[in-house]
Image (cartoon, rainbow, N blue to C red; front, side, top):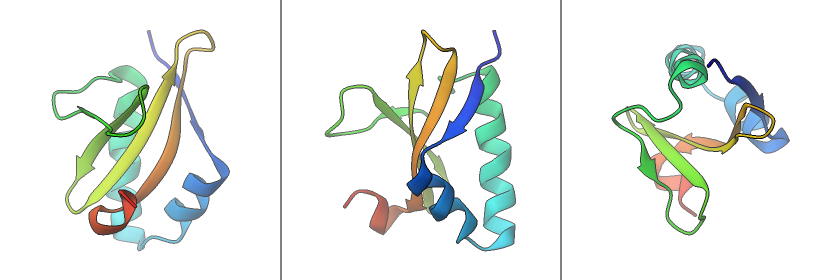
Length: 85
């Protein structure tokens, strides 16, 4: 089942602030989350019970899954040194 993708307001701002090349790479991975929201490289995000993270080079995408609404919600996008703060 294909899930839809939603961005939190802060994740959308973080995404739009990135370099165009990085945005393209991240957009491809986010689109893949709609089909497979638990890819092999997914890890549980520490500190949040229902949050997951994927790695895209030095960048991380933090997301949660709303199974009732069939939505993957992108919560945070950022460089690895900043996203965990």
